[in-house]
Amino acid sequence: MNAPREPKESSTADTISRVLWVGVTASLILITGGTLLSFLQEGGYGGQPGEVVRLTGAAGAFPRTLSWFMGGLAHLNGQAVIVLGLLLLIATPVARVAVSAVAFAKERDRTYVTITLVVLALLLVSFALGKAG
Amino acid sequence: MTPLAFTLVVLGISYAAGLLGSLVGVGGGIIVVPALTLLMGVSIQKAIAASIISVIATSSGAAASYMNERITNMRLGMVLEVATVAGALTGAYLAVVVSGRWLYITFAIVLAYTVWTMLKPKVARIDPAPDALADRLKLHGTFFDKALGRQVDYQVSRTKLGFAVSYVAGVASGLLGIGGGVLKVPVMNLAMGLPLKVCTATSNFMIGVTAATSAAVYLMRGEVLPFVAAPVAVGVLLGARTGARIMGHLHTSVIRIIFVAVLAVSAAQMLLKGLK
Image (cartoon, rainbow over all chains, first blue to last red; front, side, top):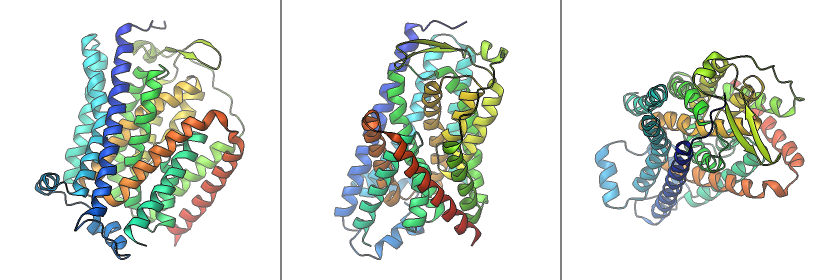
């Protein structure tokens, strides 16, 4: 009853392991770098004690427009770099699910292709609904 | 407090949370949220949003090494994460409807439950039962147990129960910014018949996707503050890595007692904040 571990499955495990490691490491570098930039930049975190109240309040939420984000990245704005890191971090498990969907498709395992695609669809819905909510 | 001091304090707290959590087998979220709200004055919604980001980082980091060691039951993880992800979406939406007061109270309940699971004497395993669904989904597995020095085969039972509990764990994760392993692992171990190591690895595997789902909702809603989320994510991840490295060299019994005490005090404080 115990399916022997096929070589295919173990190479999928290696790919997934690598995707997760690279995703987490790269996003943490971006998050750390963005934080350092925010301390150095004009209009970043600033040095006044009162700033903490502003940054932890509603005003600290990053503006959600795409143009702010793209413009911020173009100017290497610290908080935009952090948001890029956060997006990459969220995308890491999504990439993991996509890799497994492809692996199951190669094995022609229909049940598991369906299961992984349902998870992928729910993940994409969460982005869309979050924007609406 | 200046922004720099705030960042460094949050970094330190998160590091400690990740370190302690990994030593006793709990995620950092369960300590980070109380610490941010009770000690740093961050609103509970923003604390939850920051915590869920750090949960993605730590669980994905840990999942990468479990995958390397071939402990994770990927198929079971894929099946159950349909439930945890659906639950996370539900939870992240409930968080909008639920007032801060109820978030504090629910969090206090989950903290108290965690304390109880860490203190209670060992509960007996429920006998395995034939599970046609597990057969059909090819969920039974095998892994190499380093401690025993041999390959261990296991059968999976009660897949439907596991699915239901995973949904609840997903709701808790999306609503409270925790991983939800505390809810899943006992059921996977005691009722579904998986060896504990496989439970931990597989639960971890699911938590990344689960947390990504609710994190996406929180991020798109603008609840994730880069100023708070950045030091939390970096601190918890580094703490958890240190924990994994020094784990074998420490006697964890003292750490466990300290951890239980911290959780118990946090539970009481969170409850008081909710009832005020």
